[in-house]
Image 1: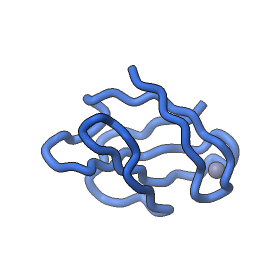
Image 2 (image 1 turned 60 degrees about the vertical axis):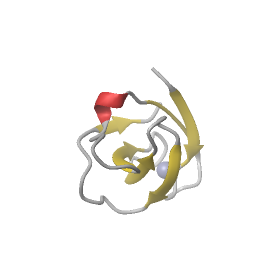
Image 3 (image 1 turned 180 degrees about the horizontal axis):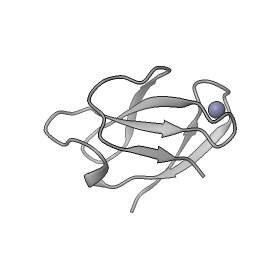
Length: 72
Ligand SMILES: [Zn+2]
């Protein structure tokens, strides 16, 4: 289960989360997944490639995601 480290686009705090292939719709990459920040509790959309690496992120909840992950 890959661990990912990134920055929350709302509050710029570090976030850490675990993601698996079944957390995303793998029919189309980059695939969106919803991440809830541990610091500010806001949701953002992270897009990941087929290796579950983060390509980019959006502040809003974008369509197409299937899982919401609470960051640690
Ligand atoms: Zn945040």
